[in-house]
View 1 (cartoon, chains in turn blue, cyan):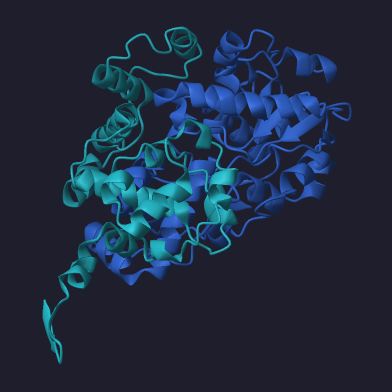
View 2: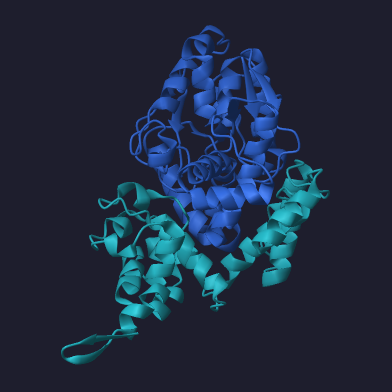
Length: 290
Length: 190
């Protein structure tokens, strides 16, 4: 199976283990990721927070590159990039005035027949059965809290993905990987997103609530699908501990890292050593050697 | 604008000016009218950042509905909105409040209102500046620029060394090849 691949900026920096692990897992599952040539930033929060036209134009540049590469499907593993691409495509499709302005700006039309997919949809295309058939490590003792965050399912009218309040698709993949998903309350609560720098206190409070609820429901690990969520939940545990000394660390894994562990890849190959929170507690419980 | 009736001239200037109201400007940008909101407050009840805001999200909509434009434009609330879209998902009127907040910020910038949350604005400026320069987000450049803009120099000094050691923040930006095209997009839109 061949799919277009838009890594997005975070996956070349703070979220580079997301890219590393996804590429390794994809090749084990016979997925060929064809990277967009000379892709650029989707504009992220800052574009849509300040300039609507810019927030459509920046993703549009990448949609045009996908057209040139004759791609029918484009996987955007970062939930924020996925969201911005979906919203931009929707704006172009439904608002002729925006479409005209953006195609004038780009000097060409924007493709309509491209489908942008998120990381869960990519694994769904591979198939639960295929993942289960390739499982090498025994993770049945591991309890995982699947954290969707905001941007995988919202705005539901545009993404149409899973369910707006009670998604279950990531849990299905965790089961296919042989582990146990936990039932919990914070899978769609916001981690504070881009406030990490200008308002770290908000991120500390929101992330702590998410982590506490996951622990309350017995999770050994929180699984994420967004580099922003990862850095808020993983890197900011240091700041959480400063504020709340009783805080005990919990590892935060990307979905691709967790599936990679199940498929028998080594923690280091998946970039687990690049996390801020030590993943040792999880690896010991799963009896996986570093 | 004046209309003539049997009772003489009626001053219609207040209705004429409606095209220039904040409500009308938001409607133009978002293709939805703020008047749709019937103030049930479900958005504010589910908002994860309500505790940090001055006005609740539905209050800001109310300001716009009633024409208290200064209050809406000077509220911290749009700048503290995290864009999580919980409100937009749950609104019984299908009013996309997150989009309303986007528009309110955009109008405040265009009209050169003094932004009540300066640090958040400096973050956005620093972020977009990096994109304009490199075509991709360059985290080291972003943090450096943000710190210089806000003089929050000591922020994150505890996590920064580990970021470098783990190679998560590089000193050299990843750049697009076609930088000219990116620059043109920004120049034409600005």
